[in-house]
Length: 366
Ligand SMILES: *Cc1c(COP(=O)(O)O)cnc(C)c1O
Image 1 (tube, protein in one colour):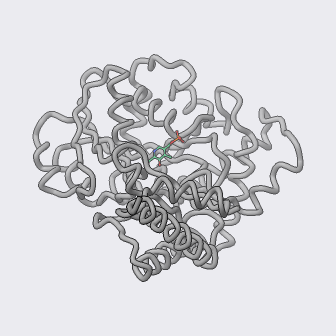
Image 2 (cartoon, helix red, strand yellow):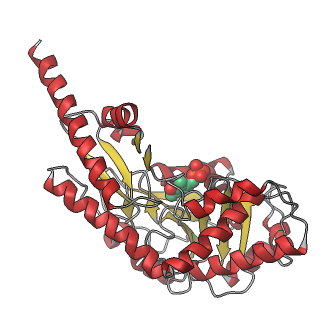
């Protein structure tokens, strides 16, 4: 069995080890120390040099997106959302659900975000920009420099869902003037699902701390910031994933650090894309994250390719939702996979696609 899905991904042996020692009690100085050490390393990887700027939640990434909406957007705010797929749409839904004032820049399938599209939203009293920097549903990686320039020009706070780009592509909060970064355990970190991380700039942390309480009690960031000072959370965290986190951070160190880690993923992505071209698969033209490669199928149903790979070979790749469900599959390059796994995937995928094409031909003739 091999996972080429975007998350949870193929885990590393060092993080699977964690579970053999059973449970641990977490309201202890020892656990606090591990948490603080992990968050400080994570802040470093995320490129945020501000002290005490990261909290973590026991919840999946969407909960962190919702908590950020609740804790940072207020009556006098107006948010611009980059909506280029399922996750951009999710930000819109969350903002709408919480009665926040927002508009969205909608991209159609295949359309790349560019300066002209953004400039249409100049000088319209926006106060914040929300973006899923890598729109995982289609694989488009937006240009952070472009977004940074637009936010600076219009004086916007920049909120980034980096869940599927952090630890897959180069990412740096300080350098790019990013005010909020959302990350989660099951993607680039290659851990179990269940923890999400929120890293903030100084100015947005002040905004959060000085604002009225959000309507959610469990996700009141003020409590999280107060507790994290001593390495704790207001409520019981997913303790085991913190131990997994400690293990993977050490592993990334021993791997040679962030640059080497990213280089390895990039190598897998480039290898995959070169082979895809050699075999005649087609790949979208917009800029891609190294985290995954979308393949476009025109003569067989993409969803059938996903099913056949799973049922015949126990190989998991991601299908696509919505209008692209029959056209796209997404193959992830993060997690404990290597170039041989990619060779194997192509070998099996070529068989599956060949068989599906033959079936279509037989069907056509009938
Ligand atoms: C995976 C992902 C999420 C989080 O989804 P959950 O299922 O809630 O963990 C959010 N945003 C992006 C861009 C993602 O790729």
